Image (cartoon, rainbow, N blue to C red; front, side):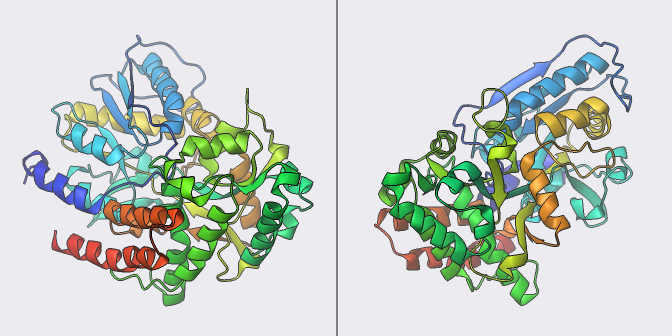
Length: 455
């Protein structure tokens, strides 16, 4: 059946099952950003891999990551100057990718390139995904583990590996009388955070930035922090996914969330209105030592006009008191998979395949992805990233630390995440109980998984 004819069913299923959380979503609440590069073809001597295209088609990329919008616009312009191929980049507003994707895919001039977050997201959009088997970009992938399949067809490719943890202001930590060597477990972190809180007026800063539960920030807790109890349950049970999460480590989840909300820059009752920008700005203004976020935040903290250098910062693991904490690394993985729209004209499909291959193989593309976007890309010609947090992850892995895998691509739906987020918000505000969070987590998972199975 033609995918266009089944769009309404696909969108209904997508609404039920969800697609993407703000993994690297920024805290921007602005409308989608759109730019089209249509400059005339120009010579390029910088490319290590020559772009090969007859310029017959065009590219429309629906970008998920607002924090990289400017860099994608610039890279699209460079590609157009080199090849003459028009490249449109539309960046969905934070938290609005699913809504934007559904709207754009219903149009006659739909995106030729979009993304899913993993197997759950792919299930909603697989009928739109072009088979990448035999493509040049698939041949340059460093591991088959970064590709998603639908039967024998390879339909999605992971294009960036990222890490998240507790971004740490080493200078403030030292002012409080500690170094990161003092924090090797949840118990250590709790001791340090509560001591900083006890001396907050004297020190002039808090332990944690605000755990904002506004939609621009709540993904850090309903998705990224929630990944930890899911990961450790999967590890204990020897599984990679489930239709019935047990909630084995939800007490540990509670302990970490309590630590955040009771030792931060604001009262827990204020968190419902706190945004991602609030949290970032508190960190930039030296109001807190710790800031849960990821490697994608690097360029927002370090660089021209930013207050920090690499010497000021580091990233430590998110400890929740489970497992071999002494050998725990950062949370590292991907939920960013490129898909090419098979419903596009063949000329546009070919142009899109050429564009993404150029992004991951040319000198201009790989430098932009490493330097301007801060990405680690899983392709053979990848440049070494200057991103401090990427270097920290590499160093921890080299020391034998075990990265915590990203299991949140197995979360049953966006609706499940929203239910957990709402329960966390009410709990922080004092209008709900932790039992409500457990219900949203465990019972909500089962009900959403059942809906997925019935779809």
